[in-house]
Image: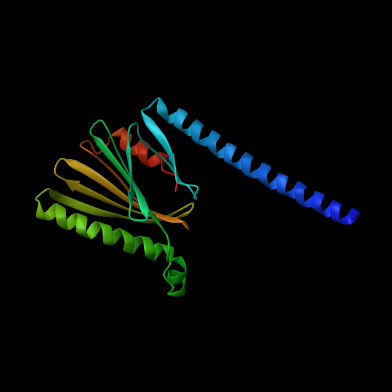
Length: 191
């Protein structure tokens, strides 16, 4: 009987410890998110954290967030610049690995699947001027592919990120190719 009480007491203690750690983890995440938003809010940026991943990014104050299939789309505008982040959950990772499709190959194919129709549309409506594939580089959580497109009077920067949990299509466009808000937007994006 005494041993049963001791085991119950140990189980209860472990349960309390686990719940306390969960609470502390959630509190720490909330404080980091609040600090991120506060740090960006003076510049009219709001912090966004993707649930279930370590990804954070900034969007202009008053941005829109909409579900998109199984993912999400965030859109915002600041001055003449427009910003978009589309989040796609990764659901076929095991199949990709079984077929020997690397994350680098996956993100390059994903980028081509998006950019093909985009470039075709720009060419058909007459706003296309030029495009450039800027390459694929490894980032701390996966790979990044970038295209730069001149369309009408705007320069559009399209980046594609892959992490173990999600893929992203991240876009910034502005009249001035050296718009500092575009650089800030990409600097704040942490895949």
